[in-house]
Image (tube, rainbow, N blue to C red; front, side, top):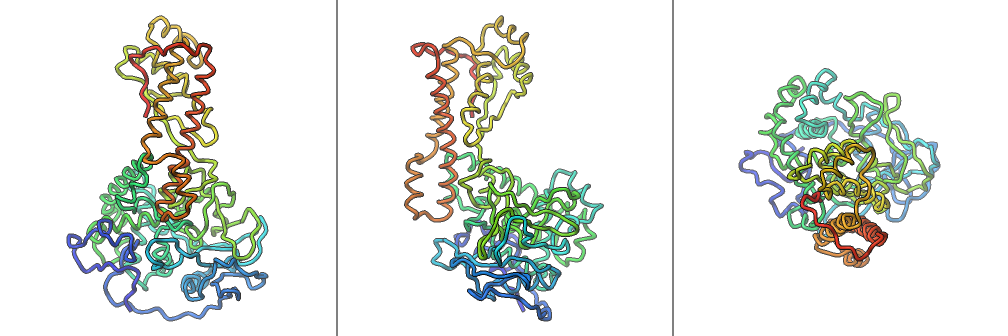
Length: 521
């Protein structure tokens, strides 16, 4: 029977296909991720009987140990037995040990009139304590480069610096999807299609947003990051045929065309983003197992920045030990690594309000037209800085970043060659210069920070008001949360700069002119 994982047909030439990103249906019910199934009749696998426990309160599909006591799930986390049954049956049939979790559903907040199916998530199937093993997935159910390419091919491929692990994994699943129900991974791919790269806020990565939706990010560096990442994905797409020929022993099992003929770029990008949203970076494993797709892993798991629980490779399996107690029905939370919110949105489609690793960058550079540029560059390097230096503004540490920037910026305001020679012969950071130069440095910072804040189409107060109203559509809401947190850090820097100005000994002094002031971006 023909599988219906996607509504794009594949019996047309690549030239005749309309790119999905250019279609109005992108935000509608026809949006899809992994490549559509090849149009041919495939034999149905024989049905396998598999016992499955269910939470009686809402008939949730579960993967529980029969010895575990079960409590009722939360009221908003009900699922039908049929919605995730095929996926969990597949896991259990293929060797998943009994665990203590359940696959439940959460509604999708969207503007499509309720046409989107609820998303699955992994929840506690019974009360858990910190340190309990929630589940353990055997490596036979984990997709890694070791499975895709084989040990001898991995190093050679990755050292070309042309293809990432994500591209290799995406291509593998795309060819597997073309096999339909013949593929071992059919139930897992079907689940990835259902999730469509959406995380806990049911929002896709901005890599799949339309141009009008990307306007939500105007003023934020995130807008440029999306463009850069999109260009990187396109470069990898152009190298896919290299992978095909290098790993011919693997791909000869697929009776399909070479990648760039079989898959349009937009389909590859959708698959790439789907893999990006669920890949797990395992620690203390070989290179071939470092990046892994783990059933029951993200996006079914909920990411949090202030969590300590991680998926870890242990004795031929990937295991999750919880770091906190759970009541039955509560979503299982795992750590997403020390990533800023811009990376969380780009990779997983969500923003964490309590992210202790959030940061923004301020780029400063010495003026190359300065006659003393080389001397100043030497001083900067001596103090661990570059001629073009990015300063990371970490949340809650804005004043520390401004303090770190000041010695670097003061270099640009030095024009006296004798003073420059004195600095070259000394050690440590550049000391505070004259009050008028110090005022000029701080004034430049203030002007820059105000200009950067003015680049956003809304103010911080307006963002707060829109979020408090609660009526924003999901993508607009997550974008507003991101820019709001960026503005808070910029305001913190502005406050710190004004405090330094207030601490100057003479408030009436006019700033010194600087012919070769550093540039701020």
